[in-house]
Image (cartoon, rainbow, N blue to C red; front, side, top):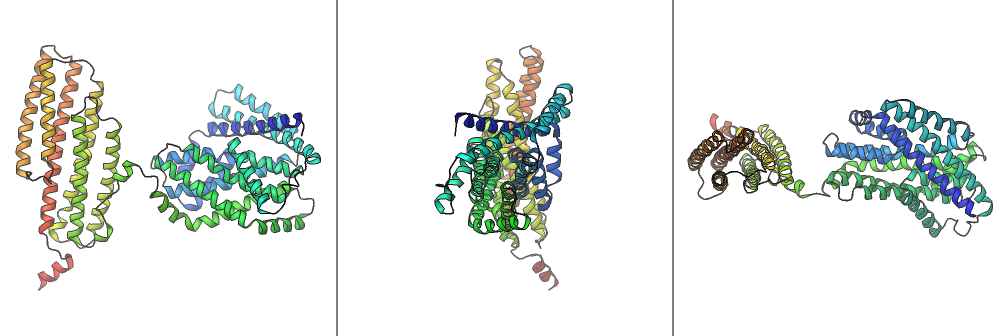
Length: 554
């Protein structure tokens, strides 16, 4: 291999990758929000998710772009993990289109006769139009032309290599040879961060006679497995949902690659049968493209029945603190049909929600700038727990609850609602605190700090598990706190009339103080209803509704 050949191969590969990037970027730019809309609307069933993943990946020529979009949708709650996995399956099928593009255009026509005009017309669109859509289409069309020019260059290089390069020492059907070519495909994909580029190299090398069909097939398998490295690198330090989507991609490709390796002898016999049926002149690139498509289809067939167990497996992995805390501890479906146990479990879960809400409030009271991201995290935890509580109450209501417990269920929903309201108020208080930078009169600052200390003590007192708490005592303590709030409000208003505070700052401080008072009120209501729920559940009859009715009739 001469220096000119090496430089030509590197240049052709560079043109190929550049064309792929331009095609991907241009199609994403031209599609705009359409890609998001298509994915949202076309993943409602497993089959639609599979076909949409394949179609969109074939269009944009980048499974990475589709995977990134999927990760965003899963994180936003637009798409479930199970839907995302089906799109991942389809995306892997869509990557096989690159091989067919290479086959159908790269080896059947005079590439330069349409590639160069495509580049020229594409750049004309990009320069002449101000519309983002037309500019994107122009970029994609130019990338399409550059893509095939790169293929043409690599084809010429490999045609020359085929006459002078002897790979007979590595070629063969043994395990060592298989591992070498698998590793080559994997390494090329890692190096270029594109399985399409690695597969194009394998196709052009096979067509140039540099490698045999069996060895080129091993390179294709290795390239398919190599895409897992891109997925793994892209989610380092990412959210749990992103890591789950990437993990599904890795698992699919690893299992598909393993199946392809185990079935390689049978698949090779099938390709030979295809060649004999179609004709001995069938190009190796055609057979390789067919091989790539077949083993990805086999992968989908293999993984389809495993999708639900895979979802369950992934949901148990990559958990962060937020997800662990937002997972209900006491709401066990096994106790739904036992009313007293179910109500007891509900009470304990609501008590946990109350503790999180009070933790948020005390954190805001104790910080001049708010608790930052911790508040957002705790709010997300409460939102998820509130959904779980509502679902649990709904299942309880469909059972035969005793009358005393049936009347209590709305109170359980009230408690979770008060907890969410505390979270919202905490965020509002923190937002005002972040804006407060100017100093204020020391006497006024001390009065605000004293009011906050009273609120913190009150939040500790309204813990229903505390030995001193009773609903009556809670109402009495709240009355004292409200009197303190009224005194603070009067002092703030006097400071405003004396021009010790600007009007804007006075309004903010009054709003903040009011929100803090409302936090205390919401916490008192949550404690009162929670105490009533737990005390009634403790003395409720253990029988279900049917037993109660039987007793009444007797």
